[in-house]
Image (cartoon, rainbow, N blue to C red; front, top):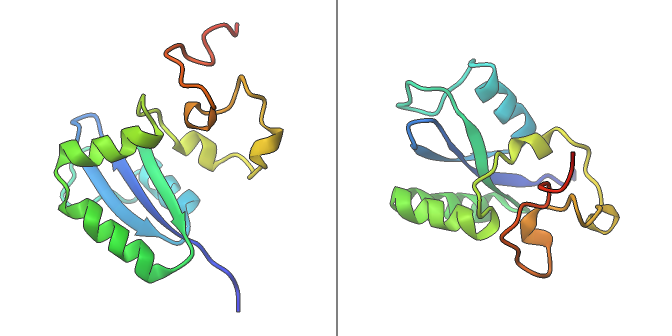
Length: 128
């Protein structure tokens, strides 16, 4: 049996709408959103950025999380996303990168939620 992960994700657009979805292949899903071949139901504007995703090993767990997030208000969804992505950066940029161990990441380049000490400065501020 092939092991697959299911991904629950949140995307947003310039109007501030937040869409929650489930996919088996986040990379392909984001590619469809980026090239405009697909948009979330009811959206007239294209997806601007991926603000949250969670990989889960079981479909029933992923569907339960999606169902919970869908019931949340927009404000609550953004609060969940900000727990892991405080600045609501576009996480889809990392979707295209090959998977690497967190141990090999340069601490200056690591995403803020992996840092031991919270910081208010951007880790990229001193780079030219």
